[in-house]
Image (cartoon, rainbow, N blue to C red; front, side, top):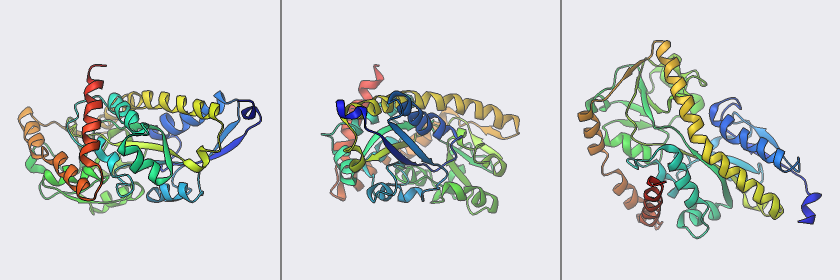
Length: 326
């Protein structure tokens, strides 16, 4: 494409955490560096980390109104705008997180899928890359090692289908922004937080917890990074192709990069005196039985809104199955 030789653009990227946080380092920062290098500087970025551009709940609106070109969008927190994407956060997919992320990538970039049409096209955005966080654990100031220990806990949930999981285990869920979580734990506004280990130390949350589960592993969490379709359509096709390739590479590497961070974080947390509790096989089976109805409930709720809940679930289940053999 001859036109692209003289084409240049600076894309603004909104993120919710500091640029040194693993989620940024292995996703948006890595992507921006790759794209800038492979386009020989024709595409550059201005990064607004740590909610500098605005609250995460407004990220999609910010892309729609042209405040930023790109932003991260967690399905759980933006479940009103991205209802179908929460399919990944449902329990019991039984896939390593790197394969889980790739299965979602395939569905979210398939322009014939209900998920693409509803969550991306209808919002005027396109997903360029995504990543699944390591399976979530529960951090608290009292030990949680049986299903009964979940009862009557007020737990900070990321939202979406994760609310259903925690409620099925007997907890009350509360929504707290990541930036306000430290204070909420410190004050006892919440009894526990449902989070991945690798994010605790960068946010100093290790200072306000004493215990963590070590093997709960009920579900993961999908984070996407999107671009405004209005902006995307101004970029020449050959440069779009470079961005797509970089996005796929980041998606493929992100989850495994985070597993290493997760393992290192657990070692460090243990060294700091955080106590890890482990559910017995019997208690894990109980937990899985308690949350067994979550997926059906999710499908029913989404379908009742006139959206393709069951269709999306079935399409994703098919992809998950195919990745089990890869």
